[in-house]
Image (cartoon, rainbow, N blue to C red; front, side):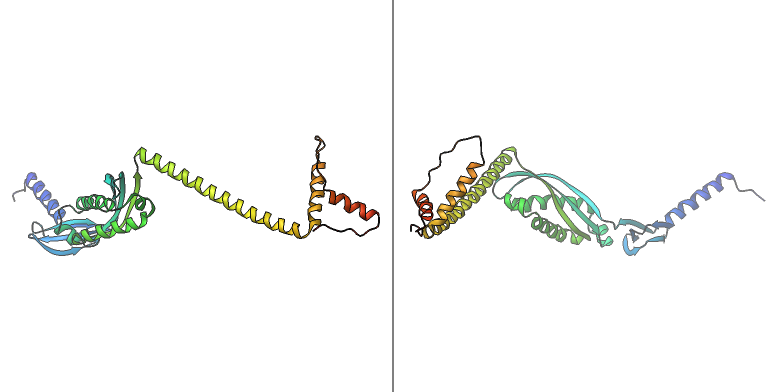
Length: 260
């Protein structure tokens, strides 16, 4: 009996390992395999072990997890002709693996390019105040446009967030001066409202004192009491003659009369 050479056994074993490697594929829970048979799509398989016909079938893995993609800072000229640098972040995932393989060469790079051009286009149609104050609205607009354009590739764009808006130094100083002027304006308005309210209260007090002169005399006495608490100064305070006459008449037993 002729013994099989060791080299032949080695070649047979190596061939068997290669065939097993081509035949058995393992996909993770977050992966799907797009199966091609002689160049034609035969459907999806996975997760778990997948058996392929060697040299006839091949598999393309697609990751179904959410991809977080940074869109680098873009030079954008807003609708009111202000040059700003804006960057963003895009969250997307593959919901149709077969489309992601067949309809586009590289779905990640393609989505990146669409996000860049859409960011410049949408922000170029917005004014600076809208970009700063209505960030949520702009994010929703970006998400809707990018999602619509990537839908034929089997991509679902879930979130688009504008991260940072870098303004020129001159614009920052102008906005700071505007904010300071706005604060001064509010302070002056509040002060004027306080003065107006105080003048109304003084007018009401004057009307009461005009109707009841006694209240004016009591106010004089209260002022004297407040001044007398300070022992470090000498104060000359005029006393109305009517007030003196009031006490003189009261001492003489006559009924005091109050001026009107």
